[in-house]
Amino acid sequence: MKLTIKSTLPDNSISHFVHSFWMLENKTGKDIPSTVLPNGMVDMILMKMNSANWEMVVRGIDTMPGEVTIKAGTKMFSIGFRLLAVEYLFGNSIRDVLNGGKDGITIACKSLSTNIGLDEVTILKILPLQ
Image (cartoon, rainbow, N blue to C red; front, top):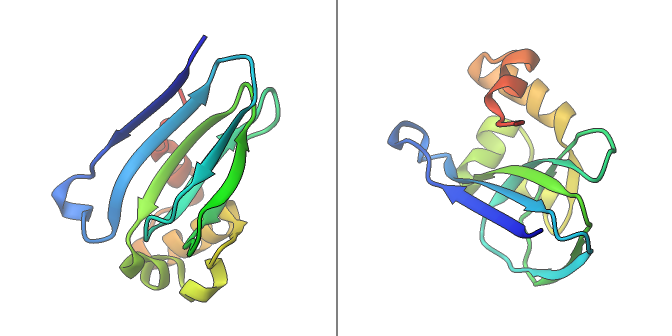
């Protein structure tokens, strides 16, 4: 049982908007306390805790460290967006996600379909759910 964290950089064609992709999986059998450090990005996170349904949130920009608990059985996939992407892709002001988050399915599907022509099914297919 272990905590797995993986990340990768985007293709150059989207690197103006996307900083990185990452995934985290807690198979330790224990909750893990952690500190989230400000990184200058907004994250669109798809997560599942234990057997709960998948949830999506848009989170960031944090201006100070925050304490979180990575629950046992948690699996997360994230796209780290650069600041430029927040207003352009999501149609939201940066202040709307400052030190907090919003429901990601609503934001992602509405904004990505409007701004770059992706439908909800396509958006969900591009996320690595396996």
